[in-house]
Image 1 (spheres, rainbow, N blue to C red):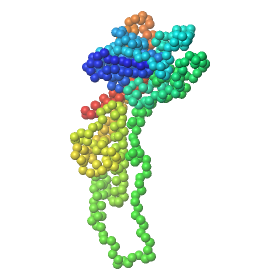
Image 2 (cartoon, one colour; image 1 turned 90 degrees about the vertical axis):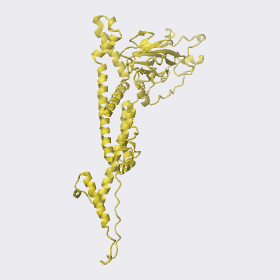
Image 3 (cartoon, rainbow, N blue to C red; image 1 turned 120 degrees about the vertical axis):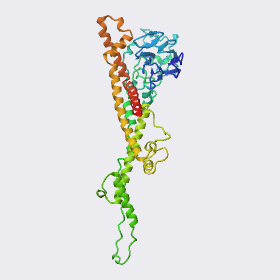
Image 4 (tube, rainbow, N blue to C red; image 1 turned 180 degrees about the vertical axis):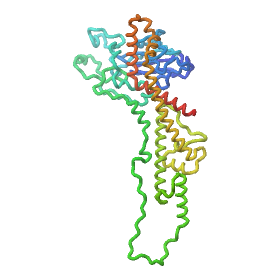
Length: 452
């Protein structure tokens, strides 16, 4: 059973919208945000970021209004979920969306074709006539299974694993098999994660959105060589034992005064550049080995942390760092830590920063990433709390015309019911809704940092 939503005029709000959305026994989120399942551009911002939702329940598609300015069906506004039928026209801002319900095919799992009149079968309950659209009204207020929570927003759709195909075969449609339908059978798995059919005994766990976000920020320390013991320093082989020492008159190897002087000069320069006293440091060979190993670890740490920052920015939809004509940081474009060390120690290539500036720029970017994450958490939490403020709930109830039809004495009860509906909708998609706001605040914080 499929649903096709088609824009009557894709250019109603300036163009740029995908002309249609096709669903097959699942739901979707529609709104202005680019991260929802069907994004409808709206420069005037009449359409909410998450304007409305399509729910697949009880073998029917329902339209749920979650907007601030309202949604209409055939020109009329509504408060409760509405069953969609072929020929309906949904109003979302300036857009008009035509609804088409496609007939189910005989091979669809969980969809039973209507039996022939000759079979004598009166439906699932022979005493009660079946609902013409197959909707179970009692299921409207039933909380969605845990597995349905993931998969509403585009972000969660990208992170969530693909739904497992149902393992139970479809029931036979032959009349000979119908006599056994009165016997108890194991519940079949729902056709998709969006349907509200009885959940299997072991429902799949919901996608861990925040776990996926944390994974994108995980630093690959092993790539930088962290957690492994450093390579042992080469030790000179002991001199072979001889029977007697060589005569004093035997000349040794020629002295390397020039080499020792150069080594001492290098260690002195290293100490001066580091701002430490040369006399407090070990001998030249040990100093060179320690300084080289330390440099590699520091550079490798910066490289893998910048890589984690890039992954998190991509997941949040922030602008990625691109190669420019000048001012490029070699730490952000090096493929390996060893390549980064080589680029920092050698003279800078054309278009790249000097070593000192590259390291400073890397630390500044890592600090900006941390600040952006904190600001995103603050903004997302504030947006969630503002949605549940008494003024916001009262305003949405008045916008939908709920309070005008209720006696003054019953308004408090009506507002409480409005709060319960609001909380129920947020609870079902709390991870996705919070993540959408989090991503928007994250990008905003990065843009502010880039303008400084």
